[in-house]
Image 1 (cartoon, chains in turn red, purple):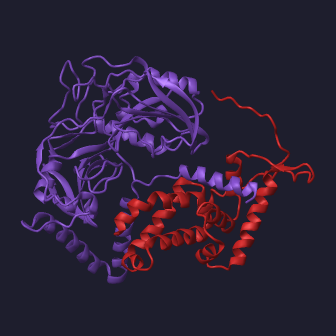
Image 2: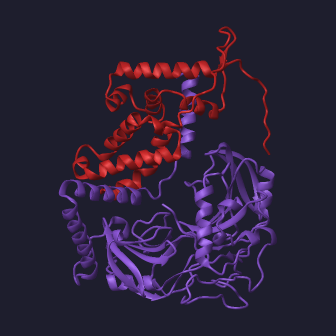
Amino acid sequence: MDFAEFVMARTPALLRFGYLLTGDGHLAEDLVQEALVRVHRRWSGIEHQGGPEPYVRKAILHQYLSWRRRRSSTELPVGHLPEPPDPAPAVERIVDRDEMWTLLTALPRAQRAVVVLRYYEDLADADIALMLGCTQATVRVHAFKALKRLRVALTRPAVVGAVHDRG
Amino acid sequence: MTEVERQLRDMLSRYAHDAPVGHLMLTRVRQVAARRRRRRRVLTGGVALAAVVAVSGAVSGVVSLADRPARVQPKLSAGLGQNVVGVEFVAGTPVDPTFPFTPPSAPVPGTRAVLTLVAGRPTLQYLPPHLVTPAAAGPSALAASGPPGPGSSARSSARPNASRSTAPSGSGAAGGYPAVPRDTPSASGIMARSEAARSQAGQTGQLATDPVTVVAAGSPWTDGPFTPAVRVRSTTVHGSAGVIGERPSTYGPPDYVLTWTEPGGPWVGICAPETVSTVDLAEFASRLTRQPITQPGPFDFDLVPAGFIVDNITASTVTFRPPAVAASPDFVDKLVVSLDAERPGAQDGRPVKVAGRAGWLHTVEDVAMLRVDEGDGFSLTVQVPRRLRIDEPDLLRFAAGVHVTTAASPARG
């Protein structure tokens, strides 16, 4: 597979990965473009090292994690997290996916990266550790903290019977 | 897996569909890579040496374009097949986007329709007026009054020597269909384009929701943007079964998607923001009438590549694809003509003459780029993959026969 074929075939998937990391379509395009430009220079070497895709995804990931602060304007701070629930009656509710997306954008980058790799890319902790260049224990800590933040934010008393007719 | 984890997985999967498609990624990567390569040459070899390298690179590209080997089969990409050994040019025909339906009034008040061809699919998009360039404002008239009357085309060329300077009186049509009148006929196409460019530069990116988009296609588009994530209900359009669904939107609330196949074709998809109710969406669909409409394209062509198929027409760009290349929104392996809001110059390669106008020719990767000065800070760009094996005289001849019309609006960036 030459470089052009690879880009044509894999760009949508790479952009989905970049979009879930950054939460912004334009930033995702910048991220993927930058990674591909770097890969383009070394294509002949990369092509013969177990396929280009893992290399490109790793480049995207590291680019994302090391991006300068000014590029991270899409990391929206959440004004306030919901009050912690009463421990007894609280149940996990079916939340609006937009709310969860907003909460995801508030996570630190490393935690968000772990969430995307674990729950979108379906990678094992060992593979995530390899991509991030850290230990599996660190991956588990990032995942634990991310899930804890999401769970605290999303756990509320259940709302029953809400009906919304859009027609 | 906990409930939060399950919801997280579901949310990521849904939001992934909002990611951009990146049709131009390869072109952009190649451009950036080429630019950086040039910079590296300057840094490592010194300015003088870099200049020599650049000139020799440009010349070698031109020579290989011009000296077509007679018996050597070109090395072709997989997508192009093995049968293209050169391109012949024949007399041009109108290259105008045509939509198979006449729409009723705009589904969102205050928006205006823009007709384009995207990957071979006629596409009607309703945009706020400030995002519709004066030159591309043609279909607005159809939004209120249905098909325009005869003689309303008002097509004219921005260049005085254009071969198709005015539409035939009476028909005003390209391809035999009623033409869509522009509501802002301009005596000066370049001025209109300047206004359009300023308008675009100042006000793009201000959409609050996805625009209403109507697409017609020869076959159902099952894996594209009209694929609903959630089915809402069934409906009937023109006697055919339709499906209304939801899909995630970039702007927050999901969009509604309505798709159906007309009796005998085509397949039609409409995407609308949630602010348009499903009732109004179905009503809009049912009021599309089977009367084709057309809109002047951005260029007139004295010559066109024989056997090639036009698969993209926007206000700034027309792409011709060889038969062996699948229709797509990108430029790969295609002959591309575009109008750009950039003044060409010596940085654009070796100077050439194109019908008396100044032009510059250079190669980026395996693509020959010819830029012709259109005046007023605009340039006409003809992009030809070297594997199409169009030699330099043919390229210059083709470019000389491209005439910018007042329907054109320059691309930026």
